[in-house]
Image 1 (spheres, rainbow, N blue to C red):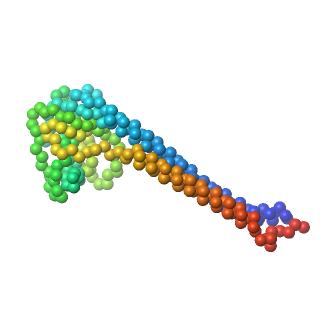
Image 2: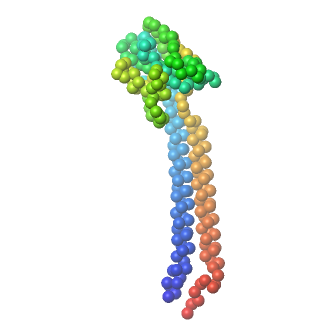
Image 3: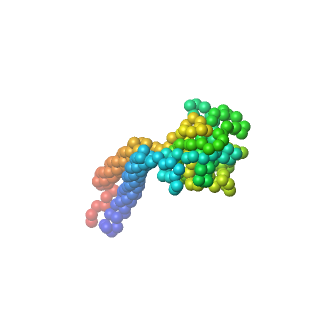
Length: 244
């Protein structure tokens, strides 16, 4: 009888402690894991930015260029294939970015993002002058990668919501998966593009925030367990079974 009664008294308290410990332990573990993830992302961003800074300058590349490389190309624009990247802003103005395929002197086709063209809020098809004949271009190469989710069709007339090489299929076929952000050369407009990279310092700040939350959860868990233990030790004598 004594053992059964003691188990009945201690059971609910023990169960509460287990549930309490499990819940807050999960929060502590989650905070630590997310902090480590942000720490690793900061390291990845440092490596990426270092790679961009050290990217080579290549004239007439014969293989797929590395991301961030400065390319020099000589050839001709395919003006009739121009499309426009929609909803660009630059210095407070609304516009588009002309995207024109470019065939180099070896016959390979590259996609060139030529800069910012102000259009205002009008939805009329933009018009742009494109140099004819053989020209020399220089710009920064961006390899195609994962894109943000797109809701609705990508193409509306000659406007694109995001750069997608399939918009030019079946012709022309681009030589490599990526595009050139033009910095100088005929047909260049105002440069607006910058690599969209969250600074490593911000990831470190996020990591510290997650670890701070994990520490707070740990402190709260320990304080709660101690409070429950004190309550168990101060139960009224009337609720404890008198030994026989």
